Image 1 (cartoon, one colour):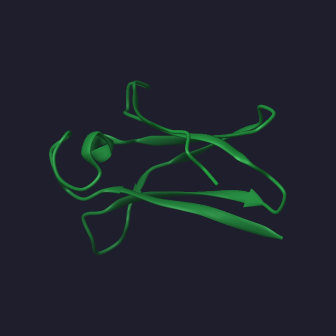
Image 2 (tube, rainbow, N blue to C red):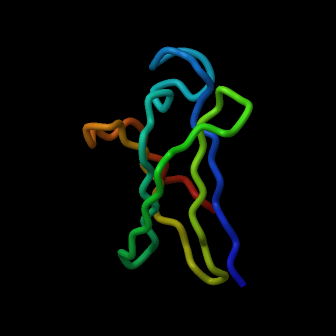
Image 3 (cartoon, helix red, strand yellow):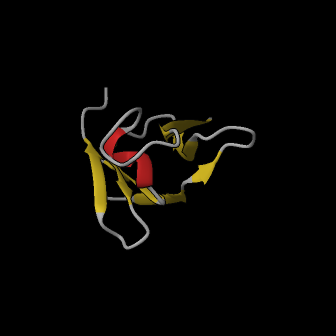
Length: 84
């Protein structure tokens, strides 16, 4: 069974302010699983909104080590490592 991690990174706010903080300028996301496998996704605008989001598959039994977001130049904006 495949589940998914879906994250809304931010609305139309300036980087560092409002919903999503620094992730407001996110252009890509990288999910790292325990043991090293990596999955990536493009961050897209949700139709009819100013929100940006990404979705990545996570199968039963897989453990997330971290999720990072990046800007268009590849600079890391966020690093989330607290996954239960």
